[in-house]
Image (cartoon, rainbow, N blue to C red; front, side):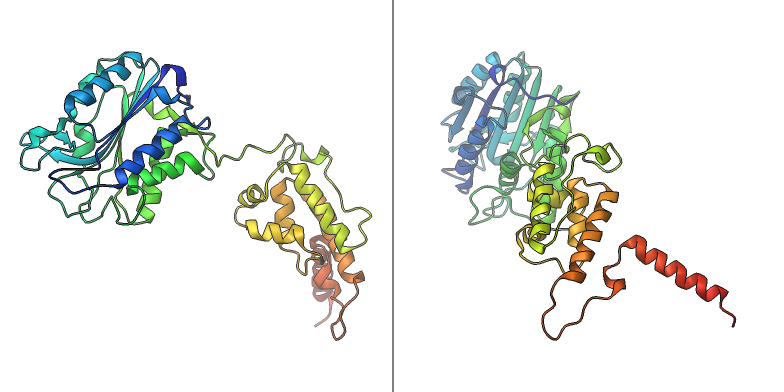
Amino acid sequence: MSALPDPGASRAVLIGSSQFDHLEQLPAVANNLTALAEALCLPTAWGLAPQNCVVMLNPASNDEVMAELRSAVEHARDTLLVYYAGHGLIDLQNALQLALPKSHQQWVGSALPYDWLRQAVLAGPAERHVLVLDCCFAGLALGTMAGTPELADQASVEGSYLLAAASETSYALAPPGERYTAFTGELLEVLRAGIPDGPELLELDVVYRHLRRSLGAKRRPIPQARNRNTSARLALGRNRAFLPGPPVGTLVGSDSVSRDWPAPDGVRTAQDFIARLRDVRQRSGLTQKAVSQRSDGRISEGSVRTLLNRETLPTTWTATPAFLSACGVPEDQVEQWHAAWAKLRVEAPRPVGTTQPSEAQVATPAARIGAAWRTLTGRIGRPK
C-alpha cells in the first residue's frame, strides 16, 4: 500500500557541493538544494517543517557532514531522505566518494566516502531510507556530470530506495545555462507539477519510471534505481496533476443515466446551446484541462475552451460529442444533444450565398443508419 511519510517523524538532509578549489564548478547545485528544500516542505509534498530539512551547501569537512547526518538519523523514526549533488569520484578500490569543496581529483581521500554515509543511515531507527545521488565521476569532460551503472550497485542500502542520476559520459547532467542539473530539475518538476495521468500519490517507483521517460525523451542520462523491501511504495508527496474520479454516476456504464445532467430540451438559439454546454461542464465538476485529458485525445484543452466560449453553433458534430462523453454524459443523452444541434443547424439563418445543410449532413447516427438500410434493402429488392 502507498504510504506518505509522517512529516513529524521524518527528516531530510540535503548535501551539495557547488564550489571547488580543484574541480569544475557546479553553480546549478546551489539552486538544486534551495528548490528541493522548498519542495519537500510544501504541504502537497512531505510537508516537512523547515527545521526537519537540513540544507548543507559546500560543507567544509567530512566531520561537518557526518555530525548533521547523525543528528537526523537519531531523530528520524518514519523516513530519512539523504540527497547529494556534486562531483562523484571513484577511488582505487572502486568505491564511491562524494566530493566536497576542497576535494582533489588526484587525492580521492579528500572526499566523503559514500560508505560512511551508508553506515550512518543504516545505524538509525527509521523504517525507510531514501537516497538520491545526483553526482558525477571526476576526470570527465568539463561541465558534465555523468556516471556508470555501477554507481547504483555501490550505493545500495538494505531497506531503502536509491535513486541515482548515472548514465553515459557523452551526455551532460549539468547543462550550461540551465538553473538546475538535468536530473534534479526533472525531479523538481515532478514535485511541483505532478505527473499527468499518474496516481494520487507520487510513489518512488512511479517517479523513477516517469524520470526515465522524460529524461530519455530529452536525450539526457537515464537514471537508475535500487529498491529494498517495500520502499518503492513510499510516496514523495501528492500528485498535483492527479485527476480525481468524477462523481458517482458520471462514468458511462455506471449509473450515469440517472444523473441529473443539463439537457438541450427547449434550446432555441446557438447561445442557449452553448450556455447549456457550460452547465454540463459545471455539473461534471471537471476543469477544462480535466475534460480534455478524459477524452483520450479526442478534444484538446484549447478546443474545450473554444467550444464553451463561442457565440455561434458548432459547424460540425465532432468536438461536442467528445466534450459531452468526457464530462460523463451517457450516450443516449449525447444523442439528444445531437438531435438538438441538428435541429438548430436546419433552422439557423444562413448567410447570403450559402445553402441549407442537407438532411444527411445533420441527421443523427440512428437516422443515418436507418436511411442507409432503406437504401440497401431497396437495391436488394430492385430487379436487375
